Length: 417
Ligand code: GLV
Ligand code: MN
Ligand code: MN
Image (cartoon, rainbow, N blue to C red; front, side, top):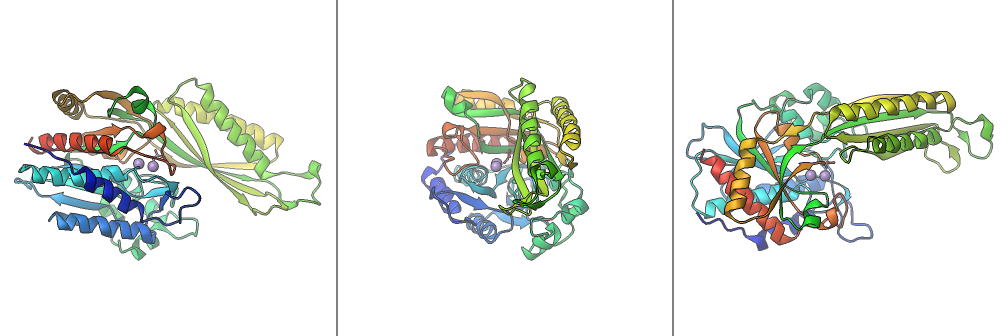
């Protein structure tokens, strides 16, 4: 069986997908923003479905807008083998995060078809809704619902910044039906394998073209609301102030301090958004909402960092005289890859003399949740300077092609099991 990846076509499709962007690129000229259910997200979805239709694959979607593209095997009743990722992009991101797994997955299926493979199990490509938390504040919406990790009623009630609920937004986008129907049973997939850029520097630094992911670190998200006392920036005297943004600044530094204090390279914590009310240059901030993203390979250590942050909050309440509330958005557990799929990946790499490295994924992925219903693994390819979530994110076509080739080779083996 000869698997040949059409590198020129895949490169051109990645570039086309990057043209579906909600916001005009700012100064860099290349950034991509594609927020779930924006008009460009919907255009990207329609375009992907056109590509799949042209190949004769079957397409369906679910109530949250996850898209399933299926090549039916010779024994269609068997649990399918699946791959995929996401096409949504955070504001001013690059063009490879997630898209390599979706368009690369499609190219892997096309290449297997061209090779003459007759898969026993169906092979399915999944494009997940809202892997990125941009709109509703929680990542992996589609895969959380597929795996039964997120309560469907809580999901439907979640609101975006304009206070539109997921229920309303998805219905307007054309995805109705009850969210509880999105969940898939634990034996639905025989195996799950996701291709993704590394989003870190290790592969490039070590000159290794392939990463085999052995585990995925566990993310957690919290929302802190700090309420002080606002007023006129000229007239409210300094000794009388309870400035919510000053308290927030101390809280942000406390997050950094405690994440560093573990001494573990796997502990990371970020405050990535800060909404200041009323947000006027001549008004003392009265309320601030911070979103905290904290991750670790060890959820116990992650929780101990949270405890230290909470102790600092208690002191801030006293000395800043601010009210601080904490809301849990999500606290997930790490996922382990399947030894069987890792073994298949290693075998193919060895047979094809491909150098690889076993590694941890510090970024989260839909695979984190697919692990709850299927044996999973991930393939990483290098990205330039380890950069991701930035416009200058870049994966070389040759690396992408190698990743897709490995993906196709292992999907073929899994589909014949
Ligand atoms: C995914 O985008 C992540 O933030 O890890
Ligand atoms: Mn991302
Ligand atoms: Mn991603």
